[in-house]
Amino acid sequence: MTEAQLEPETLRGVIARELTGARQRTELLTDCVDEADLVRQYSPLMSPLVWDLAHIANQEELWLLREVGGREPMHPEIDPLYDAFEHPRAERPTLPLLPPAESRAYAHEVRGRVLDLIERSRFGGTRLLADGFAFGMIAQHEVQHDETMLITHQIRGSRGPGAAAAVLSASAPSPAPADASRLPSEVPVPGGPFTMGTSTEPWALDNERPAYTAEVAPFFIDTTPVTCGAYAEFIADGGYDDPRWWAAAGWQHRQRAGLTAPLYWSRDGKQWTRGVFGATEPVRPDEPVLHVCWYEADAYARWAGRRLPTEAEWEKAARFDPATGLSRRYPWGNSEPQSSHANLGQAFLRPAPAGSYPAGAALCGARQLIGDVWEWTSSDFLPYPGFSAWPYREYSEVFFGPEYKVLRGGSFAVSPVACRGTFRNWDYPIRRQIFSGFRTARSAVAETA
Ligand SMILES: [Fe+2]
Image (spheres, rainbow, N blue to C red):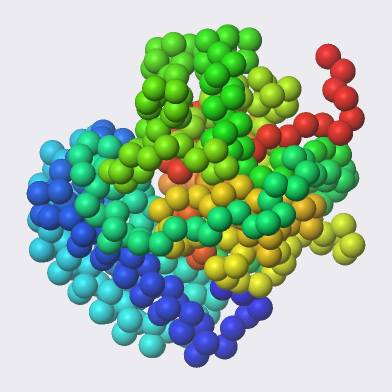
């Protein structure tokens, strides 16, 4: 989606393309396992895949057919089953959910009616319809569940053979480019004001709005996400056994949960191995580390004599153009993401080696800010000045507060439609089943204790 206002005919094409692309992925993620697997819950942190499928359809029906189209509910009795706030993930398998065939039929029926609605929509008159926002919101919702479902597949793979992996993606990212080994470990970002958030991105969600002037002091940020090789040095140096590196709550969690390495890592003699969608492979030193929680990222940064970037620092590194003083939509500029810019959209089932995607570099020189791994920041999830909840409080507002930390930049599993320089994700600091990694930063001016 561009910032420029599109003609209705062009917008129709964009919406149809995004919804259709999301649905192809949803179908692949739910067709590649048998019915028993679709209804099984692999972790109390995740829904059964069949819940995601019917929930995607239910949200699409609620927002597009009922709110926008003014239609009557198709199956009002199932609404409560698929309300994410009414039933936490842990209890979803106990609900009388639609079986796989009915879930598929429901999703198909809703989508057919939505495609009709798109043809008749004028994309104006109400805030929900302006620039096709409601359609964009629903496309983003579906691809976010596609990422969630891919996480379920990774968990599933850790419990047994990951036969689905070959169906989900057969290709691997290219080796690191020739200059990757010569990149500086960190790059400077100037201090001063910059525009954070957006008031013009048509499909930006409420928590990315409105644009405002944020101020940061000069700092340095890692050129690439922290690699598995660097993280293994932290482990080898006793990082998990030394409370000096850990926040107090992080140390408590590390003790209680018995953390000794990233999720899915195992020790095999002298080397580390990693479970990847049901396969076991040696940990690749040049790949960004994945499946670490905020407390692990925070401890690593302290061990390295550094810290996590704040959310504002991350966004300035990703978007700021010192020549114009403006913030760009993406690190590489304002144009839509291409496969040369970033590792997005589940094209691969893993991050690309550190230093990849030179064409997607930010003006400061940092690479892979978009795609590959979600990057933990030091910041709590809070509203921007002037925030107003829209179109519903449960989208963001009920999550604001110190219990959630912000992640930025998107992972290999998120589609471009739900990934941009302003996009904000949030999660508990103990979570690591998500596709999370991090990079570190330091202030350019020595901090006085
Ligand atoms: Fe949802």
